[in-house]
Image (cartoon, rainbow, N blue to C red; front, side):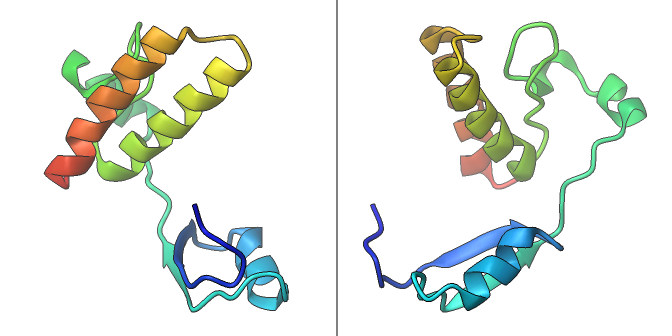
Length: 105
């Protein structure tokens, strides 16, 4: 866990409003903000993905690249907190996403 004043690098999508907030907020000591391009997955491209490129049931939670894998983990956590996804289903999604993140797609 980061402590107040600790250095860290934050990767955020291009144009995200946090970039401006973190750059001027005295509570944060941001040493580097890396703007990461938002991963794109069109409907057409999503339909072409094989079943194995999804971590959730019913072709949900695509994990075709690192950006989508990281997003799948975050969304699964949110859905568990909202009571819309079981912890066991989230664990499966996170395990599949972690495989993609370790491969470095």
